[in-house]
Amino acid sequence: MPKPKTTRENARTRKTGPKARWQLQTAKARFSELFRRARSEGPQLITRRDKEGVVMISDEQYQRLVGKAHQPRSLLQFFRESPLVGIELDLERDKDEGRDVEL
Image (cartoon, rainbow, N blue to C red; front, top):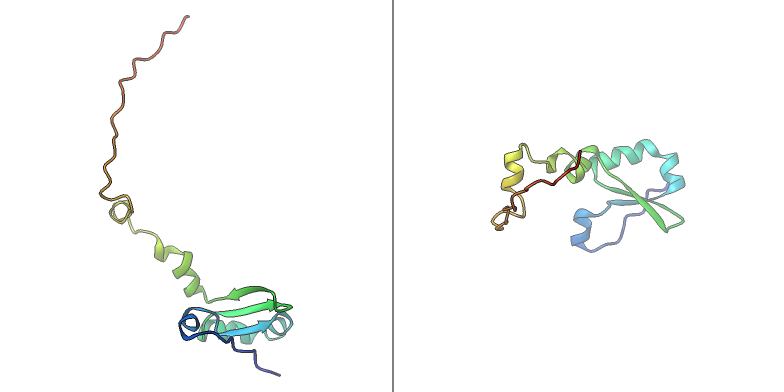
């Protein structure tokens, strides 16, 4: 069986981009190998007719991208790391006098 084609990218992209390119039919037929390579070698690009693509990544990489790794550990940490730290906010309000209601 032929090996999946390695993507031709510059060195900077290669560090973060998919390590190998798979056609959908090959990926389906060799799913166990695709799964193993995604875990051991890094992201794997799967294409259909060389146009549409998805990337298979390990669970650890996924968690780093969107998971709990990016969530603050506490509300205090959230406020300390907020991009709004140091911005002066005007939190004063006019006194609410209520309204007249006929009963």
